Image 1 (tube, rainbow over the protein chains, first blue to last red):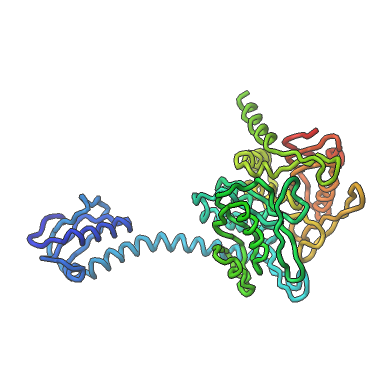
Image 2: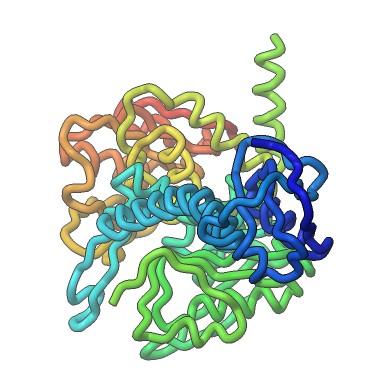
Length: 272
Length: 182
């Protein structure tokens, strides 16, 4: 019941803090009861009564309505309301994201002893056979990278060619293939990198990426991080900034993440 | 008429972004390089859209892409039409059980592989690659799909090189391409 109570006021800074909190949590508050001479948050907790309504807060200041026992503390109420308001939305979106990740993880097939004995191969081709899982995979990356000023998606041959282009198309970036030697026609720059036994080379077209562009590097999986590192070096050699590396799967025991140094890595699934 | 003009401008945007690189991979070959198309988000989107418009709601449940440039164009089409994507790969790249199809190159032979179980009998499939030259690779792809009982509805490429008569090598299957290169 709206009205003006006798006595009491809130210090402006406290009012501002409460108003900011409510605004941040998208809570609109119609009226408050203020404790007499309330000057501290503790006092508020003891004396204020908070009611939450779908009415616009008039001017960001509080009205005193009545003196009634505070039920559960102002900030706890604000937080609780915020919590319950946001939590539902957050929980819904978190549940949805977890659901999508669970689906994605369940569609990845593990093949032992490929390409050689002792290696447990993470096969994403079965993910590609599930249109929903494939779409969810792309969506999870796109949700993260859309609107982040990324103008280049670099995909590592060959499975990076499957995930990179849909992401690039969705965020309006160019797609740059990072290839094995002698596949790209015209002028290229090359970067050598180490394999478990021996070396390999990765190439990128000269002129594909301009200095200063923001780049996302994509591959299906990060193992030791050797290929991703080579891709990062190629891009940095032309003056681009690698914003993040993104993979569907990480093999954490191989510590590829550490090998990327200061470059962040985002993955959807960890394969133990 | 305005519909035609829109089509023309999208095809035009694709045509003008493809780069020709002479003498690659060997002397005498004029290589049609689509990587420059991929550097133009609008042209890339137009390319995918043109295929999607043709194939959505045509009951196609499989898009098979030929390694490696078919991996760039196939997945966005598959995603847009709700089909699965099946990679057709060079030998020994696919883990697990595969079937193989050998095909003839100018000098020698090569081999294309597909996972067993990826495609069911009776499924309608689209085969995608960036370019058709002699048609040897596309033919091998079609054979793989037909061997597991799928029906190849059409082959789709961005570029066709008509002089090499690849279209005739497709055993009567339709071919849809966006551009011809002479």
